[in-house]
Image 1 (tube, rainbow, N blue to C red):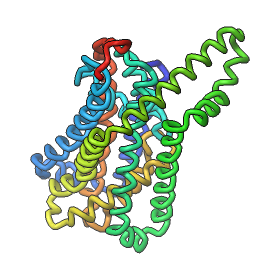
Image 2 (image 1 turned 180 degrees about the vertical axis):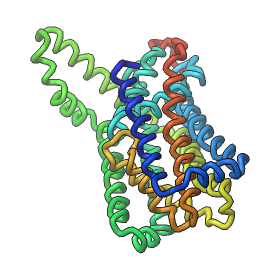
Image 3 (image 1 turned 180 degrees about the horizontal axis):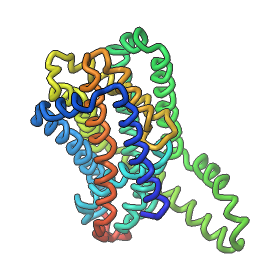
Image 4 (image 1 turned 30 degrees about the horizontal axis):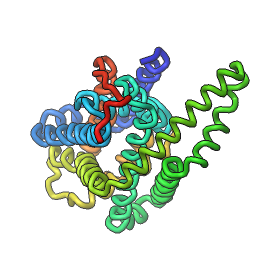
Length: 343
């Protein structure tokens, strides 16, 4: 990890501590400590296992997509991909660093850039698609609650959905319309010509076009395997289910056993949609505010609400970044992605 990334990571931790301190401004520390030591640790363990399952399933998805074409791609390297994604999502605005971070990790193992990009984009398209589907379901269940309690958050929810929808459309264009992708890449790549010799520029451009062609071929190949796609969709459904259930188990640990699991899960889906709109890495500030605003009606104790928010952020944000930082230290296993391919 570069020096700038380390500084950003440290900065995000400091910002997180400051936000938590601000959230505790009206809460007695003694009450917070009391709630911490009286919560049910078994439900916290379940919540922790949920975030572990979320990451492990994404590792399985990565291995399924890559091993379908490349031999000897280990689960260890497949698991490094989502962990590094969590780290770079957490330290870049709009989670923009997650995809490049994953690509770098896969390139380190020796996988062709076009093949790696195709697998990552397919995984991301299915992931975004399932988010949109889950969002539609959550709208039917919980939108009236959000609209009646917090009108301004309802606007954020709708706007977040539109962004996710257009992201899916854009990714599909990149994957299945190579002429469009080449024109877009040429436009973005053109400024490089100002800094290097013409020969090197055109050689690099031809290599880029070759990778785009490979991306298209791999995308078509994966798209023509309905069983593989169905497997990825099912795995992604359960991956997101584990993630969305985390606040419910946190509330159970704090003694709120009568909460409606469907409503709580639906509100968490909306929070995830809202977080994507905040440009600050990890949605810091917006994530905490959204959680407290939406779950305030379910939790009468301010100290328990703040404690629930802290545990939720540790599990869904800081744990992933810490695991990602550790994954960067793991040496990848090299694969041969030239002619040694699974047919």
